[in-house]
Length: 196
Ligand code: S6P
Ligand code: ZN
Image (cartoon, rainbow, N blue to C red; front, side):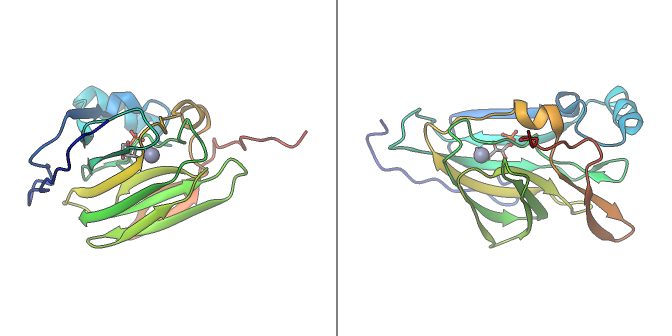
């Protein structure tokens, strides 16, 4: 249990909280199979295996009374025409929700449920997004230069199911079409629950 109230400040312009317990860095090489242009992906990984997002977590307590919380920072960049993004996941306890608050940057949260229903919401400074129980979620940075900085909070014991997304990807991808951002079908997506 976290016994005492505490406050922290998300520092600007870095987006790094002035107190945190855990810092996670995810590099391009941890995203094998997720970007649709495999050649562009391999080339970029070989050129330089960049950190494409980071997470600063507050103390995580595996307890349903607590809120796991922190800040995720997705870097600007693209693989081919597809924007840098997080791995994305369902919660291991599927029936748990999450709240996002965009602190700075521009992007999109792409979501879907096990039945294959999907949604995407634009994020910019000040946007609050409620991700209901059962919806997988992925953050995508659509800005050409700025980082996407998002505060998150979810039930302490929710955990992460990364495997389902690693196997089949999200139903929708976010790509650049000139100056515009487009949401397109993921050619390798298959429904989680195939009809019998
Ligand atoms: C956790 C929450 C976020 C993500 C972060 C990184 O439930 O949704 O903190 O962990 O955006 O994404 P991912 O998919 O690598 O955990
Ligand atoms: Zn989550």
